[in-house]
Image 1 (cartoon, rainbow, N blue to C red):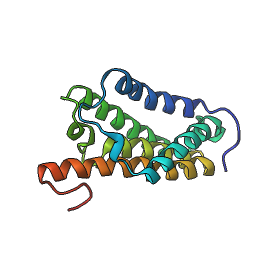
Image 2 (image 1 turned 180 degrees about the vertical axis):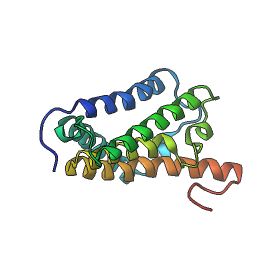
Image 3 (image 1 turned 45 degrees about the horizontal axis):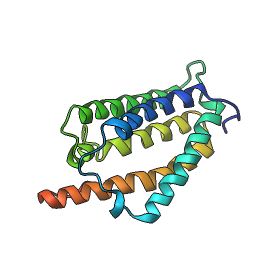
Image 4 (image 1 turned 90 degrees about the vertical axis):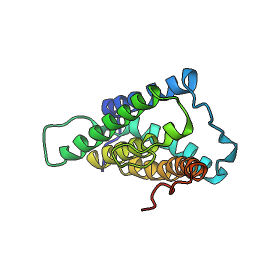
Length: 167
């Protein structure tokens, strides 16, 4: 299990997460975004998960850099997810900024702006053997990915496409 203490890696991951979200909230909000249809239960899970995951990411010292071990591959995978997440934001900011752009697949990943950061933090938790971070991310993921899938389904039904996750 991960030790308790400040995590510089957790801080770096959170900054990579928060910066594009702040830009979105302040200057690049999705044109046709309407949160009024979001499931309240998913919203509660998302908010609880956000607070818990942020706290756990900052206080899981086991996620800090260590000498190379086979566990380091988990960190490499987490960073890869975070880089793909940033690429998803670049693509979104360069688009018309509609919900279809916001929920569009990236490299086959459904709702990448929700899925990739959740995966990154989950993998960071595995790397640091941080059970509290893993638990918080699972709660966050259920709410956050669930809400984004709901929006993606609304978009695909408007276009007549198949919803995300359906082959």
